[in-house]
Image (cartoon, rainbow, N blue to C red; front, side, top):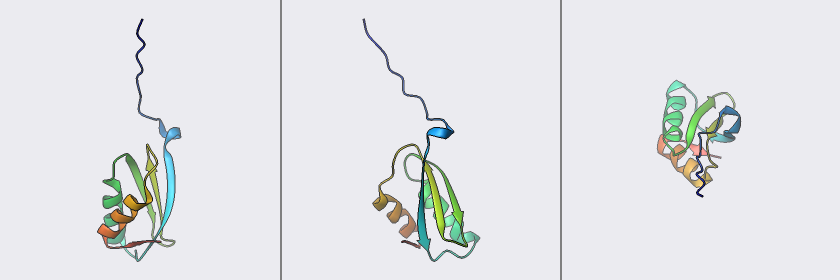
Length: 81
């Protein structure tokens, strides 16, 4: 007898949300650049940016390595605090 396991995509409630602080963002272009770079990381399903506070909230299917997020933010031209 064999058992098969099927991994399904997590539903919205199962996503991991992590908030980071990013320095140097001040406009819509900044927001788009950060969203694009972080959004290209594997398992990221969404990125929200609050320009006034510098908060960047990332939704992902798996935990993200801080170094990967920092590299994406640096690639966008900003600094992860």
